[in-house]
Length: 299
Image (tube, rainbow, N blue to C red; front, side, top):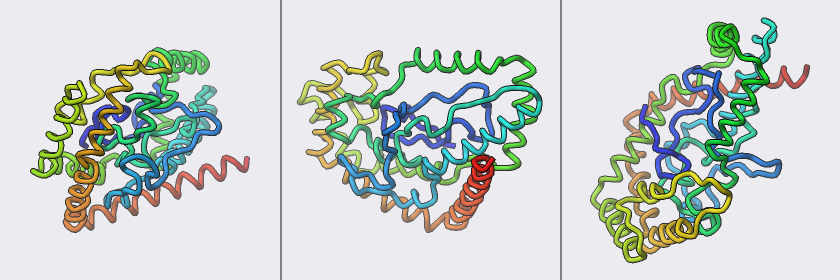
């Protein structure tokens, strides 16, 4: 499966689900993409702000949404927690809804072409709102591990019995990901199309005119690593504002998006059977998850 490049700050999408992809290791919680508050609003199905407002790619029809993934992960956690409890062990992972993802789904339209929201650029630079630092993430993980009293027996029981039970009762997110693979292929292929490549060059020249060196929107955030404070440096904000402004003046987002729409329509025509099978599989996953969550909430 094509890997995404640091979805928090660059363009490409997070093509794999974090905690339950391929029924993987649950002993370490996945790093949050953006920490949630009680009033936090999840991304909308179609972006409603910035340069991607109103844009949705054809392949998104076949992708699990972030709310669906949260339900699946929470259902798997419920099965795993009950299984561990039966063996006298504690496993209480946080709800998948305790974090707000970057995008509505793996296409990550909000940052597929890099930063595209001028308001976010002025306020947060390239950072995500309320994003935890690596140190804070590690502190949370350590506290969770200590509270659950993890040992080798604990690890073996989760991996050897409880995760397989969740695999059987719920299913696995993305054991293979044909939709994500096609989405990544679309992104890479169109990036090299003459019209898009020319526009990226124009964007780079615009950035240079504003005193910022970056060959591609994928590189723009690289000079600004994850923030260690809630307030980004002025240099980062200036670069982020110029980045979005140059995308607007060169029409980079509109041109690249148009190229991807055309490319993905051809992909769908060539992979209809595979994509429809993925949609059926997703529907089954969601149904299994919501059935488990309904039983859990009624206890």
